[in-house]
Length: 442
Ligand code: 5AD
Ligand code: SF4
Image 1 (cartoon, helix red, strand yellow):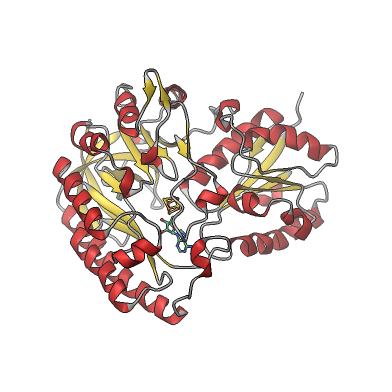
Image 2 (spheres, protein in one colour):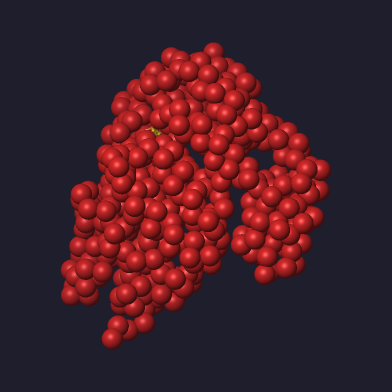
């Protein structure tokens, strides 16, 4: 008999970490751990960390410092650090903060039950190897916690691209794809639990090349197979690199109805000089041509992107090239960041752009990007859109769901409509969401 214990996980960063946190709680469920959202109730606190942007490790040390008071109140409380900061810092975390009982890198979550036994015996295990086995093989999805009709499913991890600013190839390791059949089985299992939308995750998801029934499969092939699962209604994938958008994946956007018309395709910058310095291995013109081909396959597709301003060597003219590219693409949504140095990455060694200049460029870029997003949201008003209702909204009597273009859409709806795709007429747009009225429940 295992005793009932409470696990509190704090998740930082990307969707991959959200997925990993779910799987961490799955891995610890057989050990008697159930998830709590109250850190004061916890027997084990895990920080699932992100290393992508500035001062990630420092933030974790200060969070651990704050959490010391929990340990004072409850001396038997255990602490663990997971994710990319764990991967990058390893043993150093325990050296700097001896309160921490375990450090588990992003590829070792299946080792957690064993590690917890070690902790219970007074050990302080650190696991940051990149094993060759599939960490998810050993973790069973727990049925109880699947409440949302939309789920993430990791299909590949790591990245071989080595963009000059990015830590992912170091923290998540080389690109590894999961075998196709395992993904299909996991997708079917999710659908059996009531999931109707699956978002395929990978740091470089369109580089997917997992073993299939007849050799290696591309992401397009995998999507076409997943689309055959009857009760699965929507498929998405994120994040992609422009150089891995192959012809079949572009074609799938036109011919696979379940593949949603939304593509997150980061370009990072619009100047060829900066793209080269970033080691992106594509040009602005190549990217724009690619967008034309994707739009030819699916005319109404919404594009989303990531941008870095103030990369070392970026001049005002280079930055203007980024603005020009944005003007041409008109992203439906986008994420933009000031460049910040990551020790160990090539760009960290270069001459840096002044902070005030970076801040100014970011403000100007975001003004443009927000304008485009608003124009796009405004163009939805009056239209009837299929919306997958996901969960109760903040306003009583309302549910919130997602349009095919990934807008959050709020509407009056009965709770039993969660998991249903309704036809809703858009009545208004807010800053980051739409408001709508149901016109038809199919
Ligand atoms: N500085 C700023 N932004 C970064 N990103 C990745 N590394 C850095 C960095 N060093 C951004 C990129 C990437 C997104 C996930 O985070 O735009 O696409
Ligand atoms: Fe990082 Fe993406 Fe470049 Fe890979 S492709 S190195 S994850 S920015």
